[in-house]
Image (cartoon, rainbow, N blue to C red; front, side, top):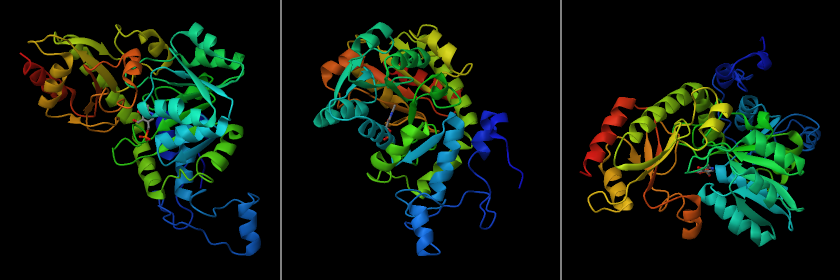
Length: 407
Ligand SMILES: Cc1ncc(COP(=O)(O)O)c(C=O)c1O
């Protein structure tokens, strides 16, 4: 069979074909689900050679599986990384990276607005192992530099922060970290390729909750780690799959592979829908602030316009209701409005075909201490909206009728 030269093809060709040759056993076009725990060896010598890595092959699905490997190969191509590890969840990816690369006595500088469970891992789990941290505003480069200590090993942040949608300047932060010998770990869940490739901008490792846009159908929990072989080797051996067992199942890998084939089309639609919804919400008198990087009013619009693919600013926005509408607090107004929606479901997660709304203060970020939440800007009136693939006119009409219930 002729082979594709990956270095010459575009994003969508990679998304469809990357890592997925027809199966050598029977020519199956769809990558088969190798639903097996173990693999048989022809001989003892063969098995030993596979275990020692002297011969290609698989031994046991906790450490490697052909369906999972196809997903890892596709993601490495899409992200422009040397290597990829698929994990059982986004948190599996994040904790594996941190627990492998850090040791007792090390220090982490983290973005001060990240997903709630990431906050728990860095601020509550890592200290149990003698690892300290400083949380800073990663949009303030001077503050980041001031937070770096002699024992700082990692700078960790999200490309687009959850839920405040602040956009990090990956290139500037990576250059700063490199000058201090600090590794940069970026969670790019909110802004997957084709929006941005953090490795090309200088990040050392990119992590994803593939549960979200990469799978894109709301039916899988999965994570991904991409970067250089020298960094990912120890993570695979000690931190994630082989020793600690945050392994993605072959069936879930198959679903993510299938979802990835339409990633480009889906991201186009998520982003253009989100832009229309954000522009509409900005005109609504009941709403105090709309946070969407595509809007010129967003504090990081210029960084987003420079860093992201043209006209693609993620599919997620957050907005804050006004206090005092008909005597209601912003929490009461937001609750009434969200409960009146008919198309978006009230649910956490994001990047699904269905629009989803959630209340960060009591849902995704409930485990962040209240004073931390205030510092992050997560007020009680803040609503996060993952804009789905529906017709944008229907979403806007639904928002209009839900806002009218506040009159
Ligand atoms: C930005 C971000 N990173 C990581 C995660 C964790 O991913 P998972 O739920 O797949 O463990 C989430 C989950 O919402 C997230 O929003």
